[in-house]
Image 1 (cartoon, rainbow over the protein chains, first blue to last red):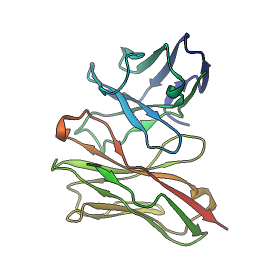
Image 2: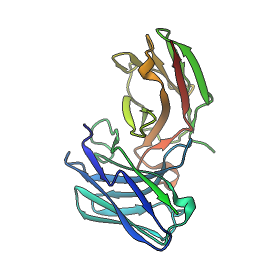
Image 3: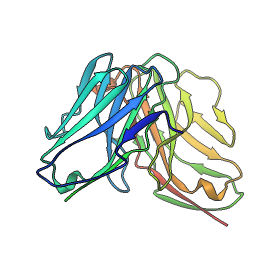
Length: 115
Length: 119
């Protein structure tokens, strides 16, 4: 079983909806990430939350907004999405650089379809 | 410039044969980690193996080994005695501890290799 839990696993939403993707980890990691993955493409980094500091990929549109209520939760709020935002959204956690091997532990992903 | 290059979009391999998946990387950061992940059709990213830039020996994890040639900036994955369950996408990725180029912390992925094991 993965130690990074993502909900929901599948989400279908209209372009006017507001929804959220949730991610939780219980490994005591201090860094969490959201990646977007289109079909047959590699994951692309959207946001990093590390030591209470948020880093944003500048190419990510503002209709995606991350929220970190505490060190084990990282939500992704979705508003006014476009059909091209349909993708697999992967959450991951890790120790920050310099602590351990540094591998990212991924959740099973949330598959989003925007109609 | 691409930081991670995987030149094999797809590979077909007979069951029980060994397979090598190629990966080259580019960084000016002296401290970095190289990772291989497996992604089955279900979508989950499964960590396979890690190699640190200062590690002297090649990493091994069960049937997986990493052929690390630092001077050539290559980090090829070798899977011995392939099994049908090895069929999946395989991604090579890098994490730069100093975030060279001003990027954020996280993994940068190559485009992946789609490996199909045939009986």
